[in-house]
Length: 133
Length: 133
Length: 133
Length: 133
Image (cartoon, rainbow over the protein chains, first blue to last red):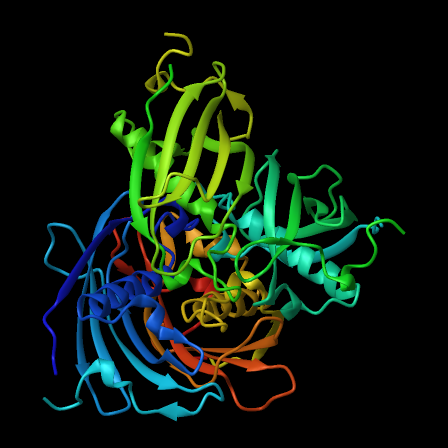
């Protein structure tokens, strides 16, 4: 399964910036996670689903490129698409763009896996659909 | 019961600042909470204790004065003392100071109460000691 | 001058919550600041205006009451109104509500003042309008 | 130039956790940045140096693996080493470990570059030493 790009728009507030006058680098991961949450919800997977004690969906791997910074007040879009990498792993491709621009400010890939209460890897819950359609 | 001032020292990192070049105002509440957690642990109350599902210790009221800002790289002290306001409420008096200075940058009071799973107010757990010694 | 309530809606994401399963208390101040920024922009004051080196708009005092918690996935509204307390101080009255509910989860007042590069109090910039209409 | 591992220890507070009961994934990047800041300062590079308007040191690339989660109250160590990848790029190798454990919870690499006010890539300032010793 490979979804289309889900687009979520929001603004950069003072909370997101740092003393360099730009968005603090860790906050792009917050932005990415907003995009993934809304994409999943658009597929029928409620947000609370990721935080079930017996099956937590956690990030396993992140690869990020920061090309240009975002600034206070910017209107930002997160573009998110998802595909099954295996029965155990979802891969999200994500970009942050300034509204009206084509070139991404930040782009990256985020791999998600499911773990049980002991932290052991589990197959992804059926709600995420078949690994191969 | 009225404790002495517990002093916790740490630094201001880029994550704490904003595009105004100073510590972002909400982050002083993060600093305050670090101070309360360490004070409670010094009294024998482990940190996880505040997050028990059947009895969550939550903030009920906050009063804060921001006198002067803290900056990137500053060495900061949080001073925290605690007293029982009643069987239901703990009041923490807290200050943020730059190391080596007397005048606080930020000062405030934080009231904590205990709630059950339904959000109903509970008496404070016995571990917090008697309201009146 | 006394503005009407400005309403800003957004969602609670994983980034906003803590191990108690509720929104972390400092994050309501982030939410409040989003509301103030959008209210000011609706009055013609761009967001970057608050971060000019020669005249920073900073929070001077905060009074907050946390009545009930917000949870992961909640749709939240920040209601914000502003009035001139004096030529030196703006007072914002703010509330966080769950969409469709009347009772606020969190309510508070935030006082803002202007300071120069040395941290000295300044009169509020003319862009904020007359203290008394 | 290749530095030894710099070790910085601190604790996980409520602010660092999320509704999954573990440290929120973006916060490990905050932890990494604390480690880099202290390593640089130990080499004679003050923290404010990274935020000079004419020469900002910004993150260009991040690769992260999250192996096991950290929990509320954990005592955490960040291990950080640095090497010149070129005249334009510093590469930091970083790990988060629970105190007393050998296996890292999170490991990663962070590439830093210098940019001028227009966002154009610059050679790294001389203060970072020669690319090849």
